[in-house]
Image (cartoon, rainbow, N blue to C red; front, side, top):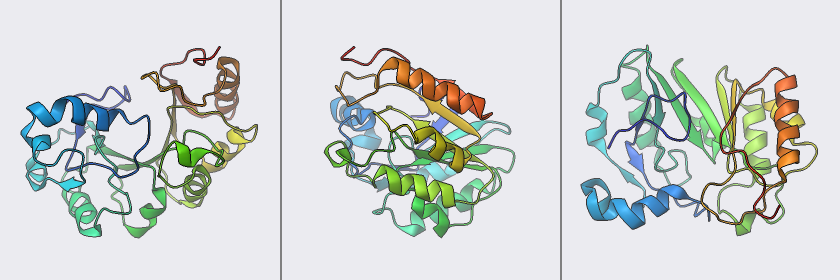
Length: 229
């Protein structure tokens, strides 16, 4: 299934040559979608569920010039469990479409340094917070501080940050995002009533204001009061 992304409005379509994830985030909408619906109706997911899987037939898809493709929104392409060979096949394939943009988004951005990316790739990371304490109750992904440092160290012209679902953060969060120097930032609250440890609305509004004052392009998604307000 190839549809326009509901996650980011700038995305033209999604493309899933690899699906599945082992981060086990408690708020994961993709796992929920697969287990409750797609595993019953989609041949692609009936066979593998949310188990990390490579789908080589996806490397026959043709992409239009100037489209913006979200790669592997139904998994984490750069999880530690993903073989280098899967990733390299995908990177080699997108070289055939130099006028198409491709967005990669991961919770394990340290792996970006293992590969050479074509100039039409955008390298993104999900960074919901800068607080490590308590994060292991939410996800098995690398801690926020590890992701932040990886993105700060990443020398690449097209960086993308998703602060979604936003979790409570320290007063230094905006300074760390500034050091990452992303070209695009998305900010949004949880949409699935997971009762996450999220910040008050006023605190989120202030973060968005600070980021925009630095000159960053910040797009707002579901911006609402925290569930406990």
